[in-house]
Image 1 (cartoon, rainbow, N blue to C red):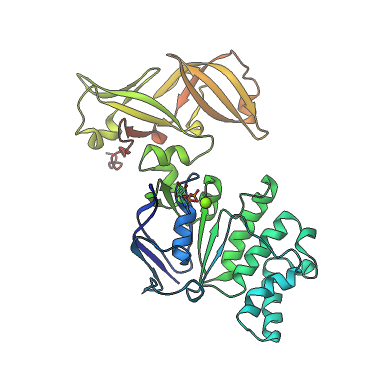
Image 2 (image 1 turned 90 degrees about the vertical axis):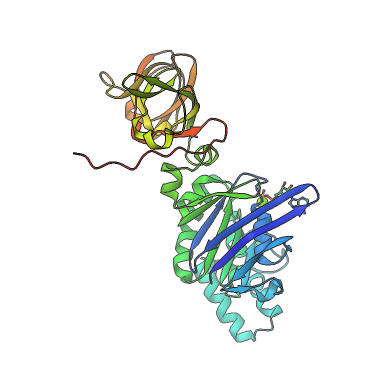
Length: 374
Ligand SMILES: Nc1ncnc2c1ncn2[C@@H]1O[C@H](COP(=O)(O)OP(=O)(O)O)[C@@H](O)[C@H]1O
Ligand SMILES: [Mg+2]
């Protein structure tokens, strides 16, 4: 079932939790909502589910305005961040509960619970009570309870937030498999975790203070963020955002940072409206900086290492570039082992990965489309 939300608004006293949200999610899509705590994720899901009544705008499910359709008739199920299973009921009875409430005949209940338990790998727990299940099994049981009525739209509100790191990793993969197996079920998945959003969502909507700031495929959010907020939310460790100034010299325009200069040519069109002296923010991904073996062709700078954080496969390096700009870089372990704190290193920057933003608004200045070489 497809979902279309237009100009959705919701206010709680002085707080405008949703400030005109417009979104379209295709039938069968896995759509992630990424936003920090307080951005409005839960309010958005609750409003779509019909638990919350919007102050303005509308929710369309399968092409139908559902303003007057009660929660239980929306073909929609929601799994809450703090899910609660009935502690005195077995997994079977927890899963069966919504069906029994809907007066589904016993034989059909048995069949459907069996199906859902199989899909969620809960069959071995059917006779047990929630307290004897692992965190992940309890989580899957909560999802099973939402799935058992075969909703066409599944709303998941931070379903992994309360699980430990290892379990989160496994469960991410499980969610993708589940989505494939469910076929046509549309999933909207809200999370503050960029890794979850990017790894699972076919598209991601970034929510900031009640507004959607960008909707795109994960790779696009990473390589072409529409503003500095999205840039800093997506990617780990976070992008380095450093000040820069637009300079004019005889030959052409340059972007001067405290520790290096860049040819402004790739952003010629985007910068056309800006005069020399304009202040910019320059985004350097930690993955786009590395120690230069020899001299740096293109962009580079000297820096002093002041922190190394080996993470096993990669090492995060905190360096102080000339002019006291603190930057982070990420290196594969084999490139990092000989680098120590207080070393002075030469760094190269991949100019193609640099993102540029207007200083005040944070709006991205995208590079010109690559002109055909010749
Ligand atoms: N029932 C409520 N009463 C008052 N304020 C609320 C209520 N629900 C949410 N809010 C406020 O609305 C904003 C969005 O909240 P929420 O949707 O829970 O965000 P998220 O799920 O992204 O953390 C927050 O500022 C929150 O404090
Ligand atoms: Mg929430």
